[in-house]
Length: 625
Ligand code: DMJ
Figure 1: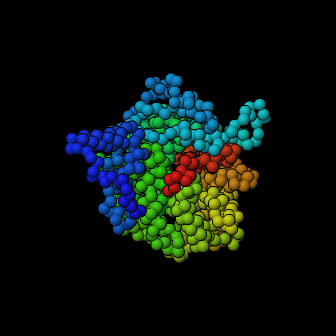
Figure 2: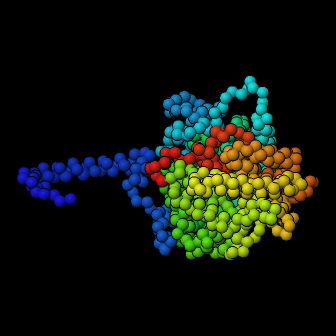
Figure 3: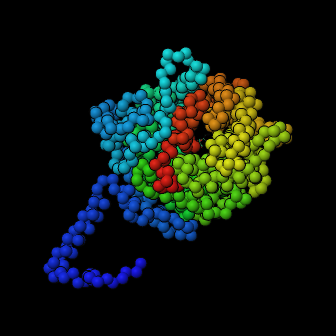
């Protein structure tokens, strides 16, 4: 813009001030500036302001540059100290929520909180830890479109409907699974129902209580109030983070962090938020790689933490697509709840790397080097090793309140490639997604791949107009195939993998693939298909699974997987998997619930079925990705 000289314009240099006046003026000015900066950096909860004014320190703009960026050292700065998280007071003791809370009084009650004791349902507790939050829980709850547990009318006077009875049965199964765990294995990661003891396993780096954390939101959903209190008390008193050992980044993220985040969003209890964030910080060393693609194993042992790839992943050279591709939802929420951008930056970088890579025929292979950023083997699968990467693309889109266009585009492009290269119809008319090895197909589907019916149904509504009906039909066909894998077994439970070869369809071909470990993927798809179509067949199929679980998996002391779905006297594997409580029973319960219970308009389920809220506040402002 051209500034023209006008008559009477006084040049800045000639204000007519004398030297002492100039000095005083400068002194006043510098005082003012100091005051402003002081306020910006020292006032509590100024992290969002800081974010506005300070350039992010961990941007990883391009693969060539990522080795030098500050992200890796920042990650170390963010690690939690090796001390345990401060123990929260026992319920009832020193519990400010038991006193009248002025903050609570003012909360809008548009979303009815579960009728749990008040200290469970609301009441953030400031003394839980030292992580400040500018997250406004009441504003978040007021933005939900539906009450968390649905609009419930008092049905006590009505005769119980069949569906209520079915729901009650599933609730009883959850109660039995929880009580058996509590009795024989409380605090251990999993229950071994045959030997009636607990099992720690080797996936969680010394962390305990995976079943507790994985169960929290299911207990809440089913209004198992006493059991929820027991689980919460254990988290407060006994869930310690100062552990040693090697942990799966993926498993800790989807089970522990997902479980804690959901528990926080459902209850507003600070203990869940603080522990989720502190645990998230412990995972950051996994990202200290030249590409920022994390390695699969985090070592909690050393002071600063370290990481490595799984030995079995291309001789320790690769990260796994489903693992590093299934962090996005939880990490965005960690940033949301902590105000710390580091989490979101880590997953945005993963997205960027994947987006920019050449993909063979548009497909995403399962193995990627975190060092060179090259694909290490052309094995593509919608089952194990690949599965939840695709799931997190469409769910990132949905969780961002449909603003994360990049995720949406990547999802539909990937699905097109899968359809073109992996999709098949068997001679018997069953639609299945095969596995692809450099152009050669393995005509099999893993049980894990059966989540894809639900995923495709979930994504159908936002596809291009001309593809919507097609995707709905595809979702129904894949789900039907997965149902066949159950229906064709003697126990009516499905095998770990099934083939479409040499006359056999939807059946395992060897003993080593004939087991069932209480997995959720098939009932997960029934739940999504039910919500989309309300076709009663999905409830019928779901009920068949309930009956089969009762008949073949229920033992005196909990539920157990079975070794052979084709035997009516199967041996048990002595494991009550944590995902049975987190996912299988939750999806079954939702299948027999109204659509507004954990409505899909408000929630997306992480890959361990932990509900995370859609970010309605992000609709236009932040882009969500
Ligand atoms: C769960 O831990 C998750 O669903 C994960 O994505 C893969 N499978 C198991 C349950 O089968």
